[in-house]
Every structure is written in structure tokens, then in C-alpha cells.
Amino acid sequence: QVQLVESGGGLVQAGDSLRLSCAGSPQTFRTYALGWFRQAPGKEREFVAAIRRDGNSTSYVDSVKGRFTISRDNGKNTVWLRINSLKSEDTAVYYCAADPFLRKIVAGSPVYWGQGTQVTVSS
Image (tube, rainbow, N blue to C red; front, side, top):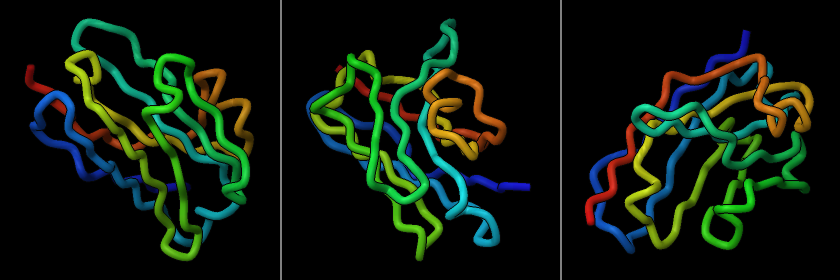
């Protein structure tokens, strides 16, 4: 079982930057691709970014390319999502996710989910 715990969310101003963190269970973390999703109020959960198990390949939804960066450190059992130039439309609960295959995360069906961390952008 992969345990994922997000942190780093909060209330921020439009234009600010924020880094979200997700800590995973050490016994299995490095064997999984990881990703981030978000769910805005009243909307469906949306894929945001994913990273291969070795950290050498990433995938992003087109709308966040150039502004969001996903990274990981398997030695720290942690994956991050750096968000630059925050916009009000980024307001959502952000979830980290894990799956043996990056393509499953991109497709929106990872096998493991964290509990989420709230990001609220004021404008």
C-alpha cells in the first residue's frame, strides 16, 4: 500500500509562487510514477502533471506548461509541484497520486491517491 500525504497549500495572492509537497511511503515510493491532480469547486478532478519513477520524464496538461514544474527526490520519498504566477483559476484541492505507470496517471486513473491540500488564490 502506497501512502501519500500532501502539504504546502494555503491562501496566496495571484502572481505568487507556491510549492506543494507530497511525501510517500518509503518502502514503495521509488517504484512508482507520481503525479498531481486538482479539483476546483463544482468541477471534476483534473490531471495536472506526472513524473516517471526515475524522475527523467515528465508530463503536463497543456494549460499549465511553462508555469508548473513537477520534480521528485526518491531519497527523500517526496514529490513536489512548483506553481509559478498563480492565477485565480488555480484555486482547487491538489492531490498527489501514484501508479506503476506514468501513462495511467496521465489517463486519470492512478491506483493511489493522497488526501489533498487546498490552494486558494485571491485576486
